[in-house]
Structures are given as structure tokens and as C-alpha cells.
Amino acid sequence: MILFGLYTGQRLADVATLRWNNVDLAKDEIRFTTRKTGKPMILPIARPLRQYLNTLPQPLDLNTALHPRASNLVQRLGKSGGLSRRFIELLARAGLREKQSHRSRNIGRSSPREAGELSFHSLRRTATTLLHEAGVPAAVVQSLIGRDSEEMHQLYIAVGKDALANAAARLPDLG
Image 1 (cartoon, rainbow, N blue to C red):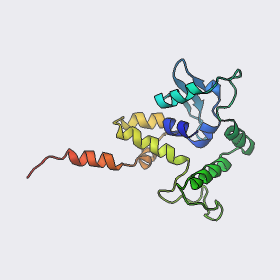
Image 2 (image 1 turned 90 degrees about the vertical axis):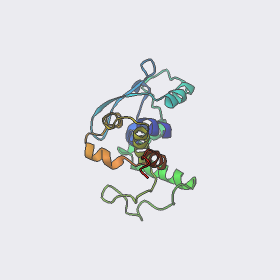
Image 3 (image 1 turned 180 degrees about the vertical axis):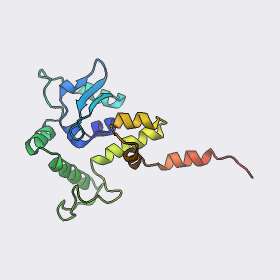
Image 4 (image 1 turned 120 degrees about the vertical axis):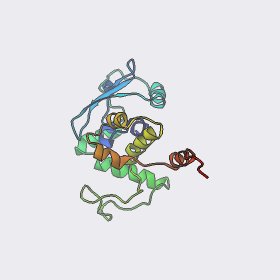
């Protein structure tokens, strides 16, 4: 799921509920409709994600979930909150995030997460940043990630240290 999050930039619920019939290896595409916005998406499969997919056994039933446990949880609950909490617990166990109770932090749609706090959604932000730093035009990144507004898209762009160093190195010597 992490590879799908990073190489597609899609939301947790959309990644969790992908089925094999959403993946067309012959065309190198992933096709689905987003749960949040209902937007139809056709995404090219990035090479590292394709390499991963090639290692998986193809099921006889193409309606089989790519991530069965995650898909079952989202289907059972009707939302991805439980799965999101499990991902946060994994991050905490890996030492990438502080372990804290979801309720005690008062986190939810009504209160924003602290800046720099990792979650599955961080992969969406990372995908956006990596594409921009690779020189992909903003309109293409926005379309690939599936954002409707330029204003929202701009909130997801983070400029990395390497990009800043490369920009500074391009300044002319006027001395």
C-alpha cells in the first residue's frame, strides 16, 4: 500500500479498495473512481510500482482486492479512519512518529494534524513534491494526483533541500 500511495499519490481509502480489475498491466494503467470526489482516474503505472506488481501472483478472480485486509476494513467500516490509525501505529512502532492516542489528540476532520506529523496522507504530499522537483509541470502533477483546484494543490507542494540548493547554485555571480 505504501508503494501505491507514493507512486500514485492517491488517498488511503482509494488505495485500500483497489482491485485487480482496476489494474491494466497491458496498458500500464490503474483505473478507478475516487471515493471522496467521485472523479474518474486513469493513472499510468510508475516503473517501480510496475516492478512490484510483477512480483504478485495474478488472481483468477480479477475482482480480488489488491490489499485484502485493508479493503475489508474500509468496506466494513465504510471509511478509512481505522486503517489510518493502524498506519499511524506502524509509523510509531518504526520510530517515525510519536505514539499517541487518536482520541487524546482530538484529531479528526475538525482539527488539523500538526505540521510535519507523518500519516498515509504524507505519501500524497511526497508524491506531489517529488514530481515538482523532477520538473513535471504543475498542471500535470495536479491532474496525476487528482486535485481539482490549483489553490489546494499549492498547499501540498513542499520544496526540498536539494531543490533549494540547486536553485541557489543557479544564481549568477554578480560580484
